[in-house]
Image 1: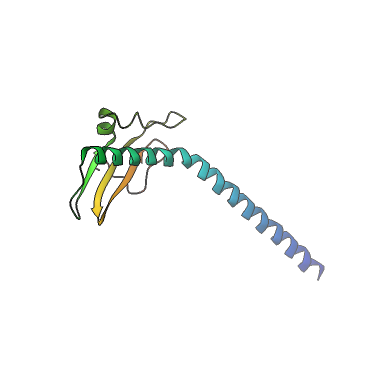
Image 2: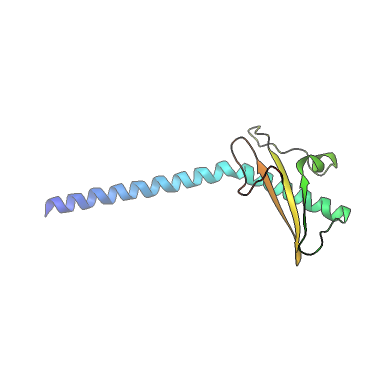
Length: 120
C-alpha cells in the first residue's frame, strides 16, 4: 500500500512539472512570435491604406498582391524589420469576398507566416 501511494505521489509531481514546463514554453514561444505578428499587422494595415487611398478594390472573387517593396516605394511602410534586426520579406493579398479582405504574409530568418508563397 505504501509503494502505491509513493508511486502515485511521484507520478503526480512528474505530471505537474510537465504541465508547468509546457505552459512556460508556450508563453515563451508566444512572446518570441509577437514581433513577427506585429510586422504582419503593419504590412496588412499598410496594404489596406494603399488600397483605400488608390481605390484599388478587386472585383467579386478576384484578388491581387501588393509587395513590401511597393508599399515602401509608395511611402506606406518604412521597412519590415523586427526589434532584433531580423529583416523580412513580405506581401499582402487583397481579395473581395462580399467585403474586401487583406491577409499579410512575411518570411524572415526565424519566422514564416503559414501559407507564405514566394510568388505571392
